[in-house]
Amino acid sequence: MSSQRSDNEWIALISTLLTAPKIPDDLCMDPGLAENPNFQKLYGYINDLRALSAALAHGDLQMFAYTKGYILSNMKALQANLRHLTWQTKQVAEGDFSQRAEFLGEFSDSFNEMTIKLHQNQLELERLANVDFLTQIPNRRSAMQFLEQLFLLYKRSFRAFSIMSIDIDNFKNVNDTYGHDVGDRVLKHVSSTLKDVFRASDVFCRIGGEEFLAVLPETGLAGAVCIAERIRTVLEKSELEIEMGPPLKQTISIGVSQVLPGDDKYNDVIIRSDNALYMAKENGRNRVYTNPYEDVDELLKSMFPSDGDDKRSRNGTQEM
Image (tube, rainbow, N blue to C red):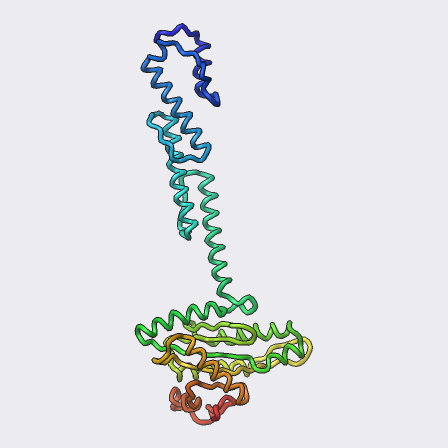
């Protein structure tokens, strides 16, 4: 390599190429040095190194360096990892919380922790969106989603389901007499008592105020009436201790309906159960009614033909 530069001049030249924010336009380079293949290779390597590091520093992951070498190889590996991490981040943004990074050490640990927490937060938001805040049972939104699925399944394969419209009797009197704090306790008491009686496959929801809805898949009218009578009786026998008086005893009225072939939408079933609930309230409360009307005693007899009449005597007998 023909050059009259001293060692210090060589060091200064290489240092300028590696460290200067911008290579000076008037950088002095010997003609013989500029034509030297080894220097050209070194100069190209340093320029690629400068360009790739500047691109990475500014978030540009598309710059491609053709030159090969140890430092550039490491930077290219970093660039590839960042490209993949960018893709993973987009997947997480679209709801794929299975993404995990394993190639950037402590940064990967932070990314993975963030993804796990985002997933947990997403699950909690979904849960809260479908749960009644006071009673911690499913809310109206959850019930309607479930009903929509059941109705579509019924239209495809005629798999029956039934609905209960449930209302706490004389609930306004509780609020007026004891205050809303006790009223809230009554709502929690009724919710916890009833949900323990329903089957695991049933969906029991609070749809607002003192009104509840139960959706019973794979259940005809007679089976639904049997469950309705069971929850009515269980609640009637339960008590809620309060500080300002004797224990409170609550009752419920229940309207029951079953999906029918002529139903155009699941709301048709709800309308019938609501109408049956209205009849139960109008005819004395603390009882079960159906729509279309069926004699509840006769339905229970069909479910339990060996029971004596004394076991079927109750406040909830329908009278028409």
